[in-house]
Image 1: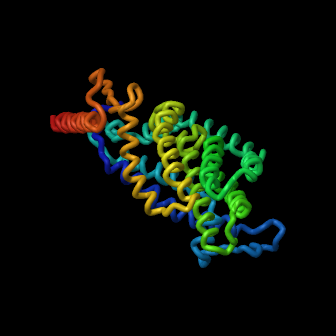
Image 2 (image 1 turned 60 degrees about the horizontal axis):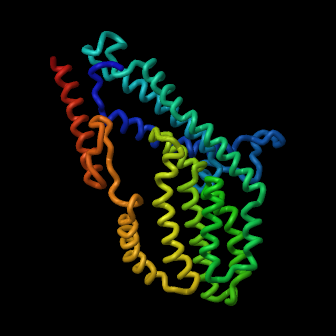
Image 3 (image 1 turned 90 degrees about the vertical axis):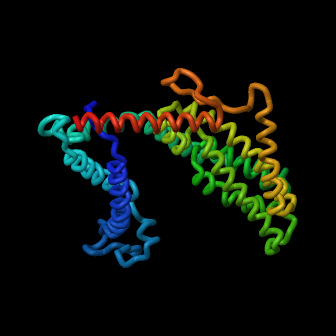
Length: 345
C-alpha cells in the first residue's frame, strides 16, 4: 500500500455517477439493438412484427433490453474513468513518474481483480441457488401444497395460509418474484374456491385484495430470510461475513414481524376486521411485544457493541453504536490530518 494516499469521497462519487450515467443510455441502446437485429430467416432489413426503434415507447425498449450487456458496458466505462481519475491525481511526495499517481493503471486493475476475488464465493452460491430454485419450481411444489390444502381452507384462514406457503416457498427458492409468479394464479383459484360471496361483489374483492397482500408479504419475507437469496448472498459477501451468520442474525427480527403480521393482520383481515383499526392496534402492541421479549433472560435485552481495537465492549444498544461511529470518525480525521502533515513536510 502506498503512503500518503488521501481518502477522497469524490473519487467514489465520480465513479458512481459515471456508472449510473452510462448504464441508462446503454440500457436503451441494448433494448433497441436486441430487437432490431435482423432475423436470419428474414430478408435484409426485416425485423419481424415486434420491431423496436428509438421512436418506440420507453416501456417497450426497456422490456426488450439486455440488462447484463448494459451492466458490462457501464462497468467497463467506469473502470476506464477510474484508471484515468487515479492516474491524474499526481503527487511527487509519493514517488516519481507513475509511482506518484494516486494509483497507477496497473495498480487500479490489480485492485479491481483483487476485489472481484472476494465475490467468487458469492457468485458460486448464486449459481447454485438459481439451480435449486429452478428445480423446485419445475417440480411443482407450490401447486402440490395448494391442492393438498385447498379443501381445508376458509375465507378467514386463506390469507394466513397463503402468507405461510409463499414464505416457505420463497425461503426455499430465494426468489420473491418467482414466488409471486407461481402463486398468483394459485391464490386466485383458491380464493374463488373457498369464498362464500358472489364473484362480482365487494366482499369478494376484499378477500382477493387480502389474499394478494398476503402473497406479496410472504414472498418478500421468505426472500429476505432465505440463505439462498441473491440479496442475502450479496449482502453477506459485501459485508465480509459468513452467509449463515448473516441469515441467522436477521431471522429473529423477520420471524417476529411475520408472526405479528399474521396475528394482527392477515387473520383479522380474513375475518373481516377493518384494516385501519388493526394498524392502530399493531402500532400499540408491537412495542409492547418488543419490551416483553427484551425482559426474557438470556433472550432479549441490549446488544453489546464490540470494538476490536479496544478488545472489548464499548457500549450497549444505541449508545454502543454511537460510540463506534464516533471512534470511526475520529480515526478517519486523524488519518487525514496525518496525510496532510506528511504532504506539507
